[in-house]
Length: 178
Image (cartoon, rainbow, N blue to C red; front, side, top):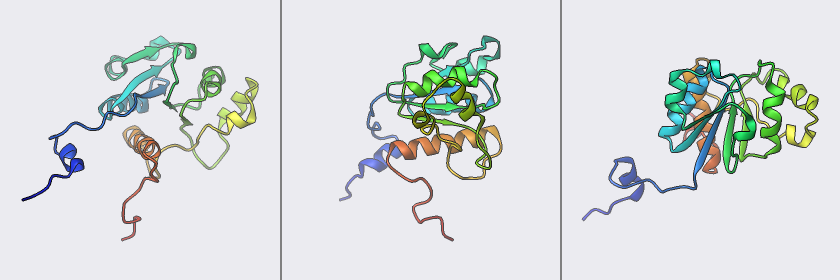
């Protein structure tokens, strides 16, 4: 007689996954990375929100992946939200990011290279955001898998969010050694 492992039943589609508290993924700015985040985030059980101040940048693909498309940060509910800012070059970065940081979401991060200070810091200082809140913005984001293409960046970001939410480091169970 074999016993069934509930985790295996979920993986094989024989049982529903545990229903976690509603997870919200807020992708800030419409671009290729946010498109992947929205589509895959929904598949991973997130309620997906696109925050894009410029309605002209939102494509049909973005709308297809997002449960909601908002154009003002004040319209975003951040209770237990994971916020991913997908562009650090936008002129409106400080004005869009400041209310999100002040709302203290569960997790907030911005894409960018770890080799230099991110422009979000100066943009948030210009908005009079406290240094302790600026320090909550994670950069770089995602697991270190050498991501370069938009799909890879979205994949590493979502994997990192899931690991963080589940209290895990991310990475291989064997420590990654070969």
